[in-house]
Amino acid sequence: MSDDHDHHDGNDDHELRVSKIRDGTVIDHVHGGQALNVLAIIGIDGSEGEEVSIGMNVPSDRLARKDIVKVEGRELSQDEVDVLSLIAPDASINIIRDYEVIEKHRVERPEVVTGVLSCPNPGCITTAGEPVISTFEVLDDAVRCAYCETIVREDIALLIDT
Amino acid sequence: MSDDHDHHDGNDDHELRVSKIRDGTVIDHVHGGQALNVLAIIGIDGSEGEEVSIGMNVPSDRLARKDIVKVEGRELSQDEVDVLSLIAPDASINIIRDYEVIEKHRVERPEVVTGVLSCPNPGCITTAGEPVISTFEVLDDAVRCAYCETIVREDIALLIDT
Picture 1 (cartoon, rainbow over the protein chains, first blue to last red):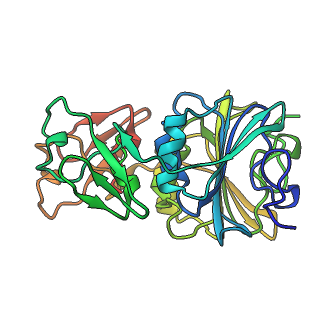
Picture 2 (cartoon, chains in turn red, yellow; picture 1 turned 180 degrees about the horizontal axis):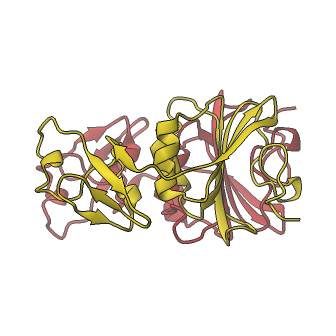
């Protein structure tokens, strides 16, 4: 049975690595190894008591290996979903209430992300302490700083402004 | 039923947040919110395909909230366990083979940790690029640099040399 035929909170029971949650968000089909970057994007490190379950490098049909992040009692903002799309382009977001999926959607890449990534160019005006908010255009396989045009293809997660 | 009456891989089924592993290590009874620091200590971020399951801020009898980290196919070295004790003094380490706990032990605080923490004192000889390996004495509720005697009580995890 494929994990594309999901029910309840996004996994078949027989492959469940992390148990069902009552209310919250399941971020499924994250590329293997990206779960900690997902946590960074949604601003969770556990220190504020958030109930979170994570499976890393779980065997998957759709991806060779996937990560899955389940956050109890929290639904994601559109901004957070937009940024997620940069590091987890195949992710599905499942909103759970009373153990049932009430909404399920894929992430979509935004055209622009503002205020979430730091430009790696030390000469860029956005990193010079000026009151300029970082802005990146989202390309098919990269992001480009709207100010200095630096293009970043890999390790976009390292640019996340935490 | 208390989670002190554990069997198999360290949890009663009815409270299982992350499923059983076949072979590896379960680090249980980590203080709530410290799971990501545990990963940092054992040098795992998922990028190398490690199968890891994490539960954060799981309700527990022994601790108000606990974290649990399960690492498939990996047993910890004594050095790693020693450093874990600094941030997770109540942790229990369960070595699992074929789904059964074959060894279970508490972490013990070492007297000294060498080469794993960085002194936060910028004037300390261990941070000056000299060939001196950081050494901290472990006190009851803190660590003390053996060179400059700086004492760190909180956020010891931030000193971990990754």
